[in-house]
Length: 229
Image 1 (cartoon, rainbow, N blue to C red):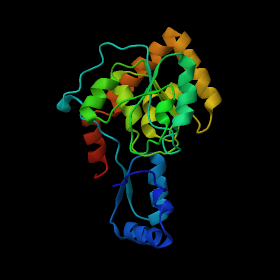
Image 2 (image 1 turned 135 degrees about the vertical axis):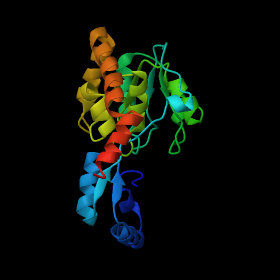
Image 3 (image 1 turned 90 degrees about the vertical axis):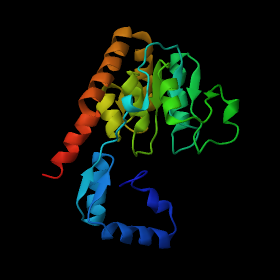
Image 4 (image 1 turned 30 degrees about the horizontal axis):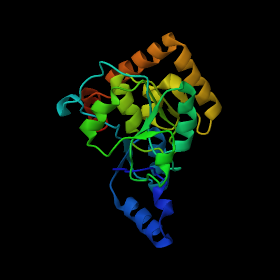
């Protein structure tokens, strides 16, 4: 099962890259996060590769559905290329609202000097219940893997602007997905979300509808069973 972006192993030493490639070719099959990852691993290994969508068992873990929220923007990562934090920051500024960010493992020194409130490290359940209060999400992350931030936002009906390449972003926030690097369009979408309540409500409702259609446990099991027929 894939963990992280499919290109991550290419940051290893040459010996480790060859070891990883040889290891992949020994598997009977692989599972991957996104459609583009499936294509990558098929080409890399010539092995059967199945898509395993990201799954979130929210109700089982006691996640409280969104029932109130404030005028705050939450961005999905820190000020490093991995998370695209600066891209998210630039887009989030368009809302003229306070900006909040989680503290991730790649957080760098002096981020606290930005006009961003950093959340403390917390459990996933705490994070999900905390997330429910925010008005909108921005996650301009060029590193594509499981796509949980877009998924988490959609569960609460929080519109999330993000880069294409993640199945969760493109499926759940189809009106708010832009090509990697297209900050100009992302900023225009932020302004539209800010000024057009009808557009905001449409994006919010659509994200929850698509979540219920594609990312429930029942849908996941249907997908799993279809792959073995």
